[in-house]
Amino acid sequence: MSLYCGIACRRKSLWCYRLLSTYVTKTRYLLELKEDDDACKTAQQTGAFYLFHSLAPLLQKSEHQYLAPQHSLSELEKLLAKFGQDTQRIEDSVLLGCSEKHEAWFALDLVLNSSSPINASLQKPQMETELKGSFIELRKALFQLNEKDASLLSTAQALLRWHDAHQFCSRSGQPTKKNMAGSKRVCPSNKIIYYPQMAPVVITLVSDGTQCLLARQSSFPKGMYSALAGFCDIGESLEEAVRREVAEEVGLEVERLQYSASQHWPFPNSSLMIACHATVKPGQTEIQVNLRELEAAAWFSHDEVATALRRNNPYTQQQNGTFPFWLPPKLAIAHQLIKEWVEKPTCSALPA
Ligand SMILES: NC(=O)C1=CN([C@@H]2O[C@H](COP(=O)(O)OP(=O)(O)OC[C@H]3O[C@@H](n4cnc5c(N)ncnc54)[C@H](O)[C@@H]3O)[C@@H](O)[C@H]2O)C=CC1
Ligand SMILES: [Mg+2]
Picture (spheres, rainbow, N blue to C red):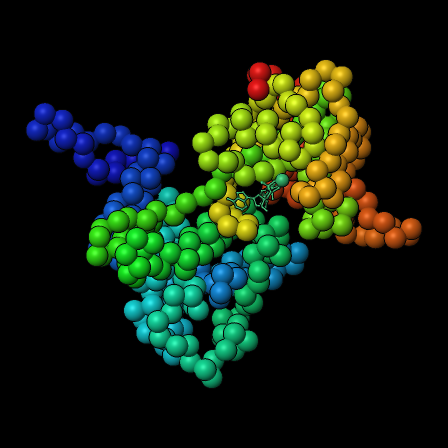
């Protein structure tokens, strides 16, 4: 689908209108909202707001999944009045994206960044009653959201958390000021601009050609195994980070590496998960688990992994008290990486 968006590009003093795709016009519109506070404020008039309470999104339960309700600006203004807050609070909201029809989406945390104290008579349970929903920890709800809501709420939580943690300039100690969209903060005294950041993390599915290596940390839910993951060190390339993480965590050297996909991951802070397949050197498969980082690691056959991917109810404890081997849910990039390997076990191709 494409349309004339009215964005003009100047070429030799002539304005020429190009036929731009819906995606391009949407992207340009969002860029304008990030750069122009007035345009962003105007977008709030027709925008939709997702609400949070101390970084937990407002959700409504519907059958086996959660839905994230949206509120219009006028609904939000009425709610803020009921909660004893100034409508000025709306300026604390952050821009998340927009629909194809340029309805902008925002997120506002009703508690964080709040300069006006919350009406003591209206605490969280009363707010939930008023909002006909519950504020639920994103970690608990993420896998019961549809893909669009999961992605929007992950971005929202990451941005709201970043703003909450960057209220002051690390150079001057003065309060920083958020732009209307929330895409940056500026220190008024020295003009330093702070942008939201993500930490790069490599996640690698190591294979020996026929089996794949999965590991678990003691903090994982019982029975769950995943691919090896680790934060990139400063100065490292992606390839170097993969080699180091695999060596550190399971004492193996990887030889071949293939990029698969990436994903924003909001926990515990904001990470960019970069997923790769890798193969170990032939005959070098003996694992030496680093017990400071992992609880266990093991090689799994193609059949074992394919069966685990089909498992629906992973938390069910077996009669002997153990939990069945299961894998991260569909929305996690680890799941996609493992599924890719099951469908094509010889993924890894490039030298590491
Ligand atoms: N979306 C997905 O499918 C998956 C996501 N993950 C995420 O990957 C991330 C990294 O995995 P881990 O094995 O925990 O990493 P890791 O193997 O690097 O170990 C974590 C340790 O690294 C250090 N570290 C270095 N840089 C850090 C930074 N920027 N932030 C925090 N700690 C840092 C800390 O000492 C920390 O305890 C986790 O946050 C986890 O949530 C992990 C597996 C699957
Ligand atoms: Mg790790």
